[in-house]
Length: 157
Image (cartoon, rainbow, N blue to C red; front, top):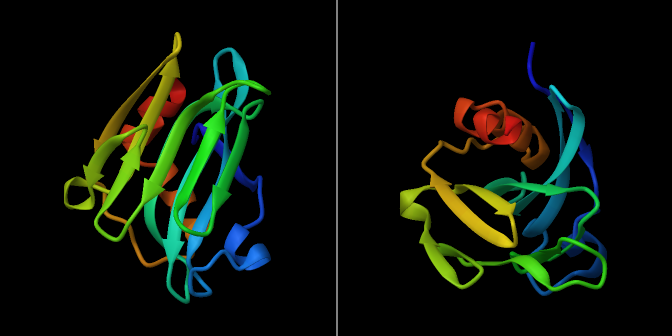
């Protein structure tokens, strides 16, 4: 049985609500990934950028940052997660057609579009994965990617 129980929407798509300057059908979104662990059910943030008429995933960032974090995204493939209310951002990202920048480090999409971002003891580490991203609807593709062995191993920790 899968460790992922289900994917639930956490925040509506900014571009659809505010028209953030990108063509309709492009933007960034946040979704919560619910994981069953030995210690119980845990919810963590997943961030992604999308584009095109079918909201094709441009990149995905799976994190171990809990749903207690404060997250925000914008239609221009950028956003952040603040681990605790009133705190400093622990993950800041900005995407472009060629690369994703996370906390000032540039990751070229030619090396992969799926990222595992771990925040432990005040430090963020990022692992880039070269997993294929399909043309499925954004939320469906996030659900599929969350089932991949490398992502599952990360989420179970």
